[in-house]
Amino acid sequence: MAARVEIKLICKAYGRLKVIDDWNLAIEQGERMVVLGPSGAGKTTFLRMVAGLEQPDAGQIELSSRKTAFVFQEPRLIPWRNVRDNLRFVNSSADIPAILKQLRLEGFADYMPAQLSGGMQQRVNLARALIIEPDLLILDEAFTSLDLPFKLTLIQDLLEHWRQKRYTILMVTHDLKEALYMADRILVLSAAPARILHDFTVHLDEHRSFSDPELLRQESELLDLMTGKNK
Amino acid sequence: MKSSLRFLLGIGLFLLIWEIWARWVMPGIILPDPVVVGRELARLLGDPVVYQAALQTLWKVLLALGLVLVLGVILGLLLGLSSSFYQMMRPIIMIIQAVPVVSWLSLVIFAWGIGWRGPIFIAFLSLLPMALLTTVSGVSNLDHKLLEMARVYQVPRRRVIKDIYLGSLIPFIVAIVDVSIGQSWKVILVAEYLCGNSGLGVEILSARYYVNIPKVYALTLLAVILGLITERLIKLWLGRISHKWQPA
Image (cartoon, rainbow over all chains, first blue to last red; front, side, top):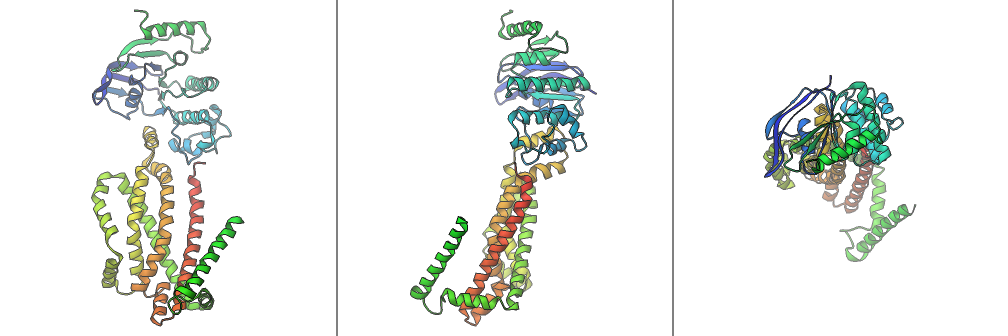
């Protein structure tokens, strides 16, 4: 079952630097939420708190997830284990050939991480997340370092998988198009100490295209919101 | 081919220096020339007593090395995992490291008299601090991002230790064996000489007792050759095992 995440008035500071200031929101089951904001706005800190890797200084995060998967910005694969064993590491009883097929990694099971390109390593990173059958999938700028065609196919593969399982997705990115392509809702943050400036609902079909005029229109609307032009 | 030629040239140069030294610098009884020692070595290779002594030394070396590796790595891992345990144990490790071998020798002779246990105990204690500290530094060099990944995915601790900790420690374990194997031969020979009842160290002691100087050098040469062979074999074996943990 997909997870529900409820964030209740959380705050976080590193020493004197306050990065997250009074966030209050809920992410519904099966929802795809993307967080957009300037660098240093605490986006990664927020994801880490939801994943339980850090604790908020104040407030509470309530999570109904039993299985949380985290696609880190860098692949974090075990260098001395091949692709198959890297996947087995998180789920020893998983159907590895199936996930390799779904993420176009067939034939790479015996490859060591160092033998793969950055993009392929990121594919394995995503495969590792999906193989645990998560009810909450967290992605921290997982596609940032990839070139556009590679990024597009990987996002499409992820969305294809999501359509079958309908888990909750929480993702951070800098890329407005990527956000609109992926999300049901987009949170727009201010600079640190970050506050939630806008909670933007994406009104687009589930099957989207990067060149969809409506997506482009919403992109410019989002840009206006981020730069404060609409005020 | 070229490297083995250079290796042989190095041995030739060593023998030449030895010959010059024996002929002109330190002639007579103190340093016999290489031909005399070589002849003595050939004679010893036909003597079953020497083989028995070499075997006696070899098993002590291997046992000491095995104990250092197993206990050193396990204890080092525990020390590396808990900084408070490490802080508590650090003075003890420093004391073991600082105590001179002679003091251990006296202790061993009081405790067990002359026998096989003393050399193994002394070699073990001389090498243990190095193995512990190397393992601790291996644990502190772990990639914490991998551990964090394992935490998010709720990977069982046993699998984390096997796949992440052990994999990260392999280069450090190879380094421990690298340093220990040569040291272990040396310490066991000295300890056999001083408190042993069998082995090449005891043979050297008896040759010295009868002022059979060529035999002392021939036995030393034999110990060096055996030391190099075991070192080579163990490294080959370790290389095969550690290959599983190579990044590519």
